[in-house]
Image (cartoon, rainbow over the protein chains, first blue to last red):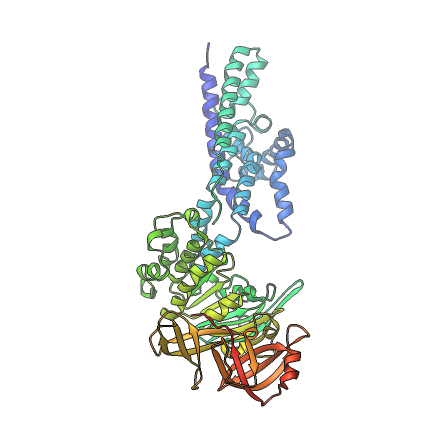
Length: 226
Length: 359
């Protein structure tokens, strides 16, 4: 006995969700991390805390509030209904939004650390060599922060794959739409299909281990800023 | 001309200077750490924004806070050399050098790659990575990289301070060539008097965020009213012309400017008429009333006493002398002063024990 087509569908959906979420987070998280690493504004503390909230909150709490906001009476729900899109709860789009919020700290924090580690000197050097701020971002910050981007992408992806509580609250359990691997395992166990649960759970275990292995063994001592 | 009026207050520190500096040659911003010299340089570069400032380099205004003008640093035609070379670690030496070069228009390029690499002796390092270079090599590349932007002003923030004395002496000749071969005005921040004495034409003395003095180096170093005179390094710069060379004894005769007086220094042969810069320390000059005695001291000049003032400690006094128009400083004991009856207007002889040849 091995994986069923429903299992494969769940795996495919999970990979799709995690890839899309990671891509969005790298685009959205970079300016946030850049701002958090450079700003001296008083807002730095509050924004940093908000970004870090998913680290400590039970996923069900995040899911609960998302459910309210995206539901028919929530402001986001009202807005999407006004656009003629219906509500985002129990949809793949809703899951992506939830995952982006849920995995945000896992992308923003490594990026923020990478940007802080670069310091201001290379940016000043670039400015005195006639590079404007955008130019500096692409020719200096991006290449110097590359290890941070790799870490952020791996952690963001892996953490989204491991999501359960938020999915259950806002996505439910709809095949091909919101039924990701973690929910599928839960279903198998509920239905006493322990053998099926084993296959998927084992695959997740191996996947997670390999991801972390790749992450930790790639952290060589990098040559310092000279 | 370089005009920089800068006013800036941090908690516990204020900068308030009004500098008018020559638009050519090397100007040293000299002072102890915390005197505001680096802040000055950063404000001129625009890396720091002084609240009240007016910065003009020849005919270009870079900042005028009254008119709300602030040109961002990347639009200022300046080169900046940081204390640590700060090469980009993700780029090869060549790519580091090209970083600034390719960001300026071809028409504005006055320094090319061949010239910069030759001037700083780095042609053999181009393929290397910054991690595999010595501190001195890195700094030379940092300087070349700044030069390749063909700056209208080169700002150097203690470029030698992070290097040991051997590396320092490895770089100094390159800095001198820069001075001699390129027509780019340089602002050079330093707290090392020997560097300043060697390189600078003009000296600004900073202390506690204020400019205590600003003037040609020879004049400024010889002033008794500045804290410079109190230091152990107190002394004067003499810029003389080579008038003869004694190959047997390897002694160069150097004529003091605008006089018939000359001093002799040990040096490699140089052609007659060439300029040479020396430093004569106040502690290396002794005074005698008689000029014709035999002594191992080679240089004995007739001088007139100009003035005196207390020196670094109570036992010493500092005497300013005039050697046919060239100022000299002598540090002698108070006892000797009274013994010889040294007083302004007096004619006596200055014996110079050692002359440090700087360039």
